[in-house]
Length: 127
Image 1 (cartoon, rainbow, N blue to C red):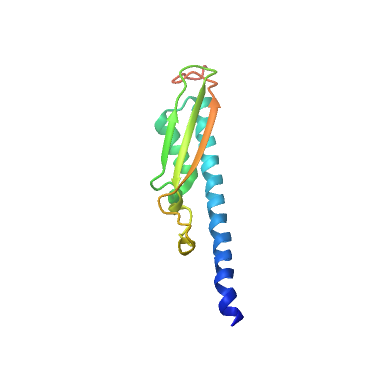
Image 2: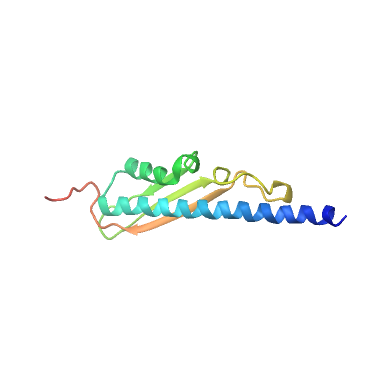
């Protein structure tokens, strides 16, 4: 009888640990990808398409499905540029806690990476 009472609570706790671990890992990957994209943008002056490809490459094939990468370029050196990454939570984890009222459907992981422009956009390195 005790098993019948305790098992649903135990399984809910196990599912919660697994789901939040996967979400935490995905958030770390999204943050790292946004920082990499911002660094690429600000230090090398890469184009927006190159930054998007680099961010999606760091996210991997599963997390990059239906993700959005917004790039705010700065006009001059010393101004702030930023990369914002939005990844659907459904890409990161199965919906394990829907029965407990926490669903990852229509929810997103957000990561912002502001950085100071160190190079003029569209400039090239001098040899």
